[in-house]
Length: 338
Length: 246
Image (cartoon, rainbow over the protein chains, first blue to last red):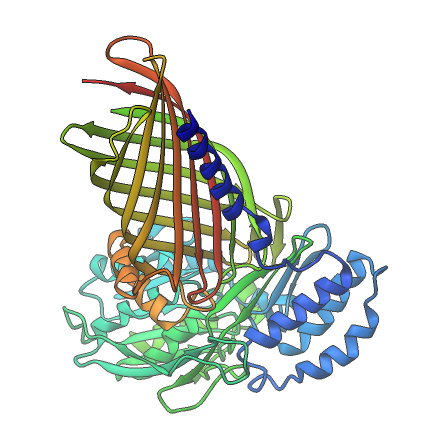
C-alpha cells in the first residue's frame, strides 16, 4: 500500500509542477494603455515596410500615446488606432473591432475609390458567350462573344485560382487569353505562379523577398529568390492580364511574374502596391489587425510597395461608357487579340 | 483493446501566432489503444482531441465588398504511439514495466483572425522512454500509472512570424500530405535543450465480465519549446473507457 501511495503522490506532484500556469509568458493586459502599447510595439517589432511607406512609427507613438489613458473608451481607442495606421497606406494593414467597425489603411479599400469602374455582371452580360460560360460563386470563365478569345475572372487567389488551369484545358485552341485580375483581392501567394509556367520555355527569376524574423529593425531572413518554373505543355499564345487599383497582394505578385514573359501584356490601371505577405494578430479586447512582414523586390531590384505596377497599356473604364454596357479595358484587350 | 472518449482541457500559448493563452474544455477526446502483456509489454494507441477558443465574440463585419467573420481558433491534435518494454522489479504489490516507444504528434492550429486566417502546426516524432506500474486491489480493481519522456525528437515548427518564403514554398503543392512532409523536412533534431515534453497517464479498470472491463483514464500532455518562439501547451484528458480482452 505504501508503494501505491508513493506512486499517486509522485503522479500528483508531477502534474502540479508542470501544470503551473505561471510558466505562461505574461499576456498583454486588457487596459486601454496596455492594448495601445501591445498594438504599437507589435507593429514596431514585426512590420517590415516603415521605410518604403515613409512612416516614422516612433513619432506616431509620441503623437498618440498621450491621448490614451485608463479611462479611454473602446470607441476612442478605435479612432486613435485608425488614425495611427491610416498613413501607412498599406493594403495589408487593417483593423477589425467588434461593435466599432473595420478599417483598411489603404485609401482605395477604405474609401472604395473607383470601385464602380469594374462590374462583373456587365462582363457576363455583354461580353461572355452564354453557351460556353462556366461560373461559380467567385469565378467565371468562358469565350468572348464572336471572338476566338478565352476570358477568366476570379476574385481571389485561393481555390478559385485553379480555374486558370481549367480555362486553359477548356479552350486550348483560342487565339489568346485574357486573365482579369481587376478587383482581385489576392490571397494565397502559392497559387500565383504555377499557371504562368506554361507560358515560358525556361525558368525565370522574377522577385526576391525577405521576412522579419526578430524584433530588431534589421532582423530579416536572407533574401529568397522566386523563380517561375516552366511547365508542360508550353503555350505559345498571347496572354493579356487586366489590372486596376484593386489588384492586390498575390494578384500583384502574379503580375510581377508576368512582367518577365515575352507573350504577356498588362493592361488597365496601376496595381495597388501591396506585395509583402501579411499576418494577423489579436488584442486583449478581442480586436484583430493585420500587417505586412515582408520586403519584396522585383527582378529589376526595385521595391514597388506603395507604388504599384504600372501596366504596359494604361486604360481606365469610364462611367458613362459602363452605363452603355462597355468595359473599355476589356474591349481594348479584345481589340488587341482579335 | 480499449476505446475511450471524454473531455479535453487545453491551455496553449504559441507566440508565433498570439501572445495570449488559448484555453478550452471540450467533449472531444478520443483514444483507441491496443495492449498486450506477455513476455514483453506492447502497446499501440491513437488519440484525437479537438478544442476551440477565442478572445472575441463571434461576429461578422463588412470590409469593402467582403464580409469577414470572427470565429474561434481551433486546435486539432492527433497522436500515435507504439511502445515495447519488459517487466522489472517483481513485487507483491504491483507489477512494473520499462521500455521505449515511438510517438508521432500532429498538432494543427487554425487561427481564425477574420482578416486573414493562419495555419499553425507542431509536428513531432519522438523516441521515448516510459515506465509503468499496475496495481490490483481485491483481485478486481486495476490501477495503472505511466510516465513517458522523450529522449530524442524530430520537431517541425512554423517560422518566427508563422509565415515566410519557406512556408509559402512548403504549402505550394496544395496537397495536405505533401505539405506535412514539407514541414517535417524543415524540422530539426532536438533533445531536452529545445523541446520539453512529458506524458503522464493513469488508468482505472473494473471487470464486468471475463472479457470486458470498464473504467476511466486520465492523461496529461505537456509541451514546451522556445524554437523559434515559445510554445507552451498543457492538455488534460479525462475519458471513460471500455476494454475488450481477448
